[in-house]
Figure 1 (cartoon, helix red, strand yellow):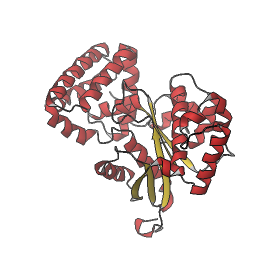
Figure 2: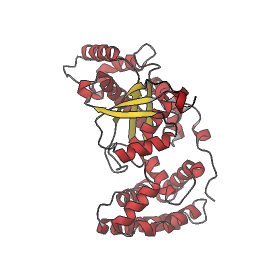
Figure 3: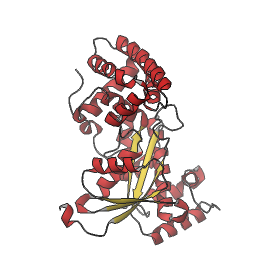
Figure 4: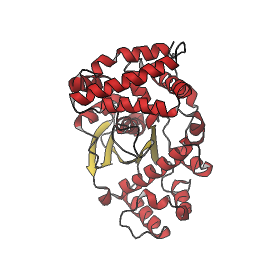
Length: 337
């Protein structure tokens, strides 16, 4: 179906997120970002929230994910996510492993093509942890994250120096390995990042337009709900990160013309968005626990039908529990040589 023959009435998709810390991707309070979207009518959402409030014995006027995540309310969560619940077949969750997302951004500075981006990022992450340890690898990524987020010329120069130091250590440890040339290309790209805040801004706009996980997540919403020629009206909890520039980039990423617009609402006034908040919060906790090696197999099985195959994820063990399809088959392309 072409854009000219799309149905005129867009589908309204209610959205909310959990784990958002903007473009701070390491050293924060969460390791996973989850974005939930759903298509349910207002009446269903009102009835669902009312049932949760009663069964969870919650006096709150706005029920948050923390309520259904309490152990004493597990049966409520199982019903909400289960095949007899109101979300089955009507919801979608996009997950982002923040460390992997930042790693792909670092690899992108080496001008690696999209086809090889994820595979090179996976290779670099595994090699780095093996060679220098997880703490040192996170420190390197933290230096890169600080550089990307620099707000003054002095900060940009300082963070660039920190990153160079970390990269030299990793390059020395990874000598004669498959990632050596990739590290060299990353190092070559650093002069622009060290040229003051102007250079950082220019480089960021060029290679890192989607660093905040909400950007690829909303693009995935548009792609999923906009399939088969549908137009999508996103109804989102108030989110300052979705600037006009980022919305334009989302439209570019979706490449379908399916986005009819984004309307922001207060979640307290829209029960559909409250329901999306519950799903996002539950998905983030379940995915984070699985990523940390302490999975809840029953909850992982319940969340799996909602998880987007386009989620930004690299860990095969946790993905086998929570994700659809074979993770290895998603990351195609040539590895670094």
